[in-house]
Image (cartoon, rainbow, N blue to C red; front, side, top):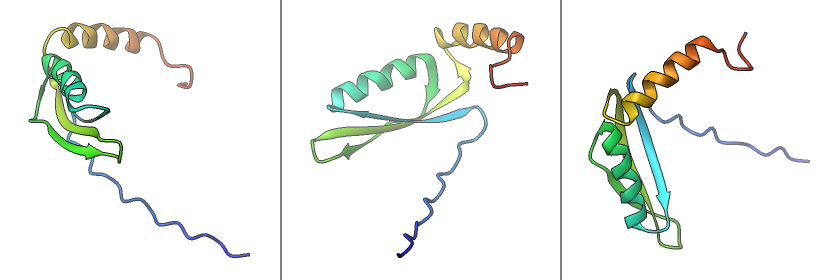
Amino acid sequence: MTSARTTPIPAEPVPPAGRADIRITAASPETARRVAEVLRRCFDSTEQRSYPAGHEGGTRLHLTVDTTRPAEPARSWLATSRSVAADHPQGDEA
């Protein structure tokens, strides 16, 4: 019996604190752009970058959002989620 050797997957760089890298995969470029537009209405973001995704003709779109500079409606959602999260620990937290 031979053992399978696994190659470690290189770690992707982690964005700076307060930022999030977003990857959207969709069947069409228009669908990916529509999702990215919603995110840009909520957060300051970088210019999107798009790439082909798969053999079926899909699109993969990347952008980075800055969660330290949210716009509405994300600002109100973040404010309410922080107060709830601070008051109630998650089930797996001690």
